[in-house]
Length: 499
View 1 (tube, rainbow, N blue to C red):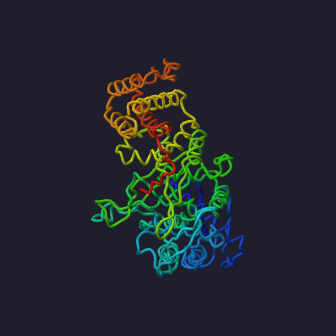
View 2: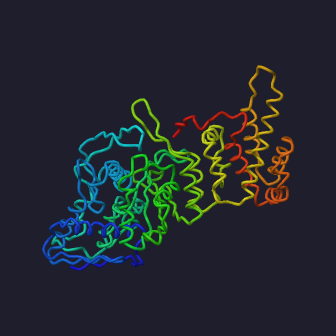
View 3: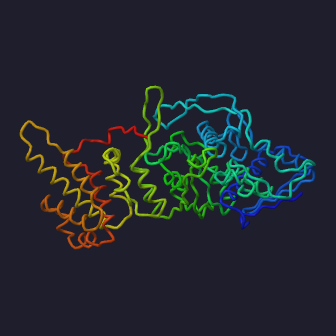
C-alpha cells in the first residue's frame, strides 16, 4: 500500500493541512526515537509531502501507527508528534484540556478514569494555580483504524461519514436528513484529519464580551511548509510556557498571540505560517445535541498589526489573582477589544463605543486607564487620532477643574457624575450631526484647549468629515477611559474580577 499526501491537494482545508503537519511531526518523532516499526513500513518526508509505504495488512499498520501516535501518560493525552511527555506539565495539561474542550467535547469520544488536581505555575515570582482536569483511560483516536478498513483489514475505497470530533463543526446539518447532509471524507483524508490536534493550538478563553459557554479557542494554522511549521510548533515558548500563557481574552487575542510568539523574526519566511483560523465550539438553540462552530476568524498579522498587538501585550497584561481557594487568571478587557479589531484588520479602537455600552463595561475599561494611555501613545496610527485624544484629555482635565473650583470647602468634587454625563452624551450620538454638536459643545465649555488651538485645521478636518464621526466617537470614549489627570484615582491598582 502506498499513500501520498501533498499540501497542494485542492480538496484539503486548513484543518487537513494541519493534520498533514501533525502526521509529519509524528513520523519524524518516531524516527528520532528510533521506534521499532512493522516490517515493510517506511516513509518519506519533505517540506510539502508525506509518502507512506507498507506491505503488511492495512489495518495492522494503521493500528500500530495510531497506537504509537496517540498515547496516555498519567491520565493525560500524550501526542507523539509533540513529544508531549518531555514538555513541562503546564503545556501537557493545556493540550489535554484543549483537545477535550474542542475535538473531544462529547463524552462518547473518550473514557474517563476520574479527575485530578495539579498545582501549575503562573509565571516567575507568582503563586501557583490549582487546576482540575479529567483523566482518561482511552480516547477515539487510538482505535480509529477499524473505521478506515473493511472486514478483511483493507483500507476502504469509498468515502466514510465523519464524526464531529474528527472535523469540528463539519457535521450533520439536519438530523432528520442525516444520509443527505452528513459530512464525508475519503478514508485516507480522514486518516490525515486524525493528526490535526498535533499541529493545532489551544487557548482557554476568558472573555467579557462572548458567551461564557465558549471556553476554548482552537487555533488552526495555515501551513505552507511542513518542516518549518514543525519547528514552530516545537517552539520553546509553546513547550515550556506557563499555564497563564494559555489564556486569551477572545478569538483575536488567541490568533495574534499564536502568530506573534517570536517578535524578532518573520514568521512567514522562517516557519511557513502566514495566517491562522481561530474558532470556538458550542451549542446553539437549534442543535443542542451537537457542538457547532459558534464563531470563527481568519487572522493574518502584518508588521503594523504585530507592532500594535505587541504594544497591547506590553501594557495590557493579564493578571493572576489570588482567590479564596485558588489563584485564577483574569484577562485584559481592553486588550480583548483591541485584539478583536486588529484580527479583523480594522482600526485598533473601532467600535469601542458600541461594545462598551454600559456603565459596568466602561468601568472595566477604565480600570486599565494607565495601560490604555500608553497604548494610545505607542501604537502606529494616524497622528490626527492621537491629537484628537489629546484634545479630549485636555477638555476632560479642564472640565474636572471647573467642577473642583465650584465645590464648597470640605466637600468632595463629584467627578464621577461628570464622567457619567460625558459617557452618556457620547452614547446618544447616533449620527454625524449629533456627534459634531456634542464635541463642539464639550470643547467650548472646557475653555481654551492648547492642542485644539495649535492643530485646529487638522482636527476640524478630522471631526467634521461625515465618514469619521464614528471613529471620533470611539476615540472620545477611549480618551475618557484613559484619562489620568486630576479627579481620577489610580484605578490600575483596582482588580476587575468580572469574567
